Image 1 (cartoon, one colour):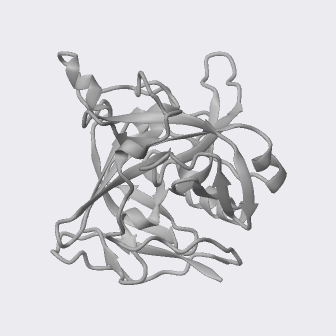
Image 2 (image 1 turned 30 degrees about the horizontal axis):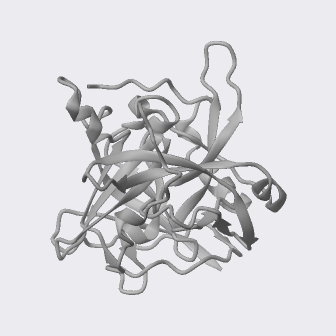
Length: 279
């Protein structure tokens, strides 16, 4: 059994934890989270199929976020997340919390559409929709999944993806996109995507044919769910989260139902808003 737990981040040096709250329980199985401080693969090993996103202000790439977590010992872990509502970001738990030691990041920044390549153009910012901080997060520990609750409704500017759940057959059929942030040999940090197939489903754990896609932890496994009506955007859905190189976890149906209830007040239909870059 797994519980949905809420943790709050406060301004104290040790990041005090709020009282645990049981919101739902369901029989789910997943891969244990990575330990804090586990060595990350070198950026030079990244998959050559990765394609740099030319314009991160365009949907759905605008909904993909750079996540920067700072721990009490001042170490920093960087990864990827996905906006799934105006102030909710879906990511990998191990980026900001180690369930074994109970050490949580004391500060987490969320930057939708981050692209430091934009700095080469006068007047543009690397954070086109601004930046926000996490105030608390909810997590499913065995799945290595967390929802970050942000201080601002930054998703109203960046837009967001809908949450989808897929059966084994649906997962193993089509080509999906995976996305996130890796560091190029030049030192530049830009959003990248690549096409990938789900080659194995083991419970809710996924194996992808993207073994070299390093550094995309927390990033979305996503696809176009429906073509938008006249004057509306296409509907893009996140169906899973990358938890490591060539590994991921799907959004189970039970979890989707919990998320639908949790996020109900944030949605007015299935179509997200058109991104509005601030700068």
